Image (cartoon, rainbow, N blue to C red; front, side):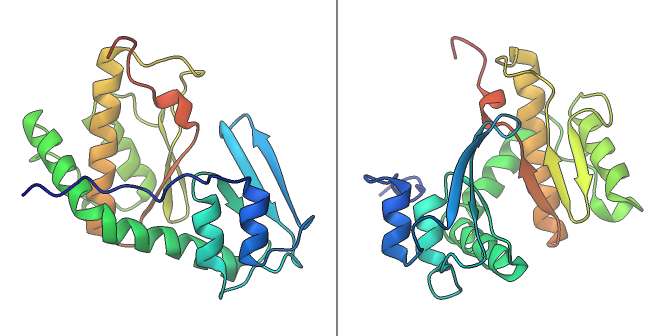
Length: 199
């Protein structure tokens, strides 16, 4: 018997505002705006929104496909923890196995840069870019304990060669972040990561 591929929670069959109200969020205490740089919606909650630790999982299920901001750092961390727990339960093992296979098939697994070999995450990020064929310091940005993928493609589909390099980079980051434990991976502009036309 083959297990079905893990899935994200189903998309809402109701407006986000309605779903949030059902979670206990007060109407008019959050905004939903489209951010060009993120190529997605940002849902920003106010301090008196009614969002709290008790209903944060409900809020995550209503908003997981969007970018979400809370004024309270504890709530922001709790929200991220819900998403991380879902990933750990449903996706992590499959993603790690897929990343290892992709790099092994490309002959790039054995030479994968290791975090412990670098004194800074900036140097690690540059080495990962170079490992996958990108110019150092062109695709990844480092901020504290996060490395953010930020390709400069202006929304255009990636060429086949660039898509392969980008796939290598994502696989490399997946394995390095798993080995590190404290390293987080961020993404900007999902629409920029479309596969080459015709694939």
